[in-house]
Length: 277
Length: 215
Image 1 (cartoon, each protein chain N blue to C red):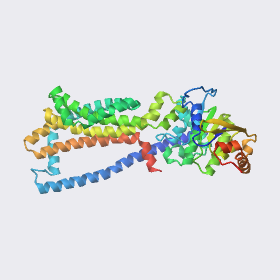
Image 2: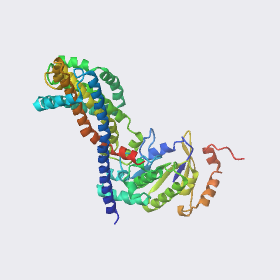
Image 3: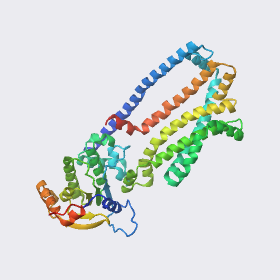
Image 4: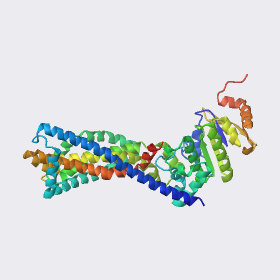
């Protein structure tokens, strides 16, 4: 019997592929680290020539951040901000993906949605923030809503484009081989849609982090944004930079430790396709 | 059975009607085949599935468990000249010929009683073509399924078909029919050349393909 030997081989190949992909990913980290250090060097140089009142050196910023983290107050603020950002982002992710899929299925719906989406994308988050302040006051509601409304159109458009660009030829294949509806979705539609959805999710996540801080700066008394407002009023540039580092660092962590590995896993077929032509 | 005719005369439309991919505007289709399968003009493999899963697609749709359908796909793929290594690749890593083999295997995997071929071999080189012809002929004998192939390559039709229908355009209609009695296995190259030359002299075929009248 040859068949078991082949499936054994297949399993081994798959394990090897997975190892290779993981190794590849970790190795590509060196490149990112190198460019990160170049950035820090430029920051250091600029700081030295401008003086620490205008721009503190990276070492000062990191030291202040370390202190803030040791106090324990920073951790709470970061968690509060992360909660608000992720809540708004999560809502936008669920609603945007679902509605975008539905809009993509129907030609009429996508034509009707287009101008609305343009309107939503064009509306600056600060305008939404003002409205949210009027509607929700100074609480969690304002930053969560602002994040949601800023992320929603990005994800909606991604989902809609993904559904609209489905390959009619592959649909015919699905029909020819009598794929049941659930399988049509998981095996034919979803892999294609995900390749549009994922970049949209990542863009929206970045947006959520930026918008939440802006909203907090103007509307709340806790969170990274509020802390930034305090450091600004104290003219404490070192602490401001420390908070900014915390903000960017947490975004990088979520993107590269969570979303990017998932994306690589889901889209491994693209990776392998390009690596052995 | 082969259906030949000029481009745009409605061959693919007819095939899509037979495959139930299109619904007729008027009239009805009397189809007593239970399990049609189709090989399209392009291989149309799902780019995000490995070759093994692509071949087993129809079997998965039929609800076969993973191990069974993979074993069936492997057996068929090896018969079609794919290697075990190819089965683990994604379609974009396969050559055009290998993709066509996989598409043919995918069609045969569901054990169809009617196989529809839509100019499936038109993009391949002559060596690959003749190899796939042999695979097709032997699988057809083994499975006993009916085959309806569309082609504008007359030699391909004469090489493989028992009956040839000639179609002409605007309005799309069948203008000639011809049966070939010689068994497929006995048709060698000289025979195919001779018959094609003979076939192309027919007045209604010349008319269907808009060839100039012979003096």
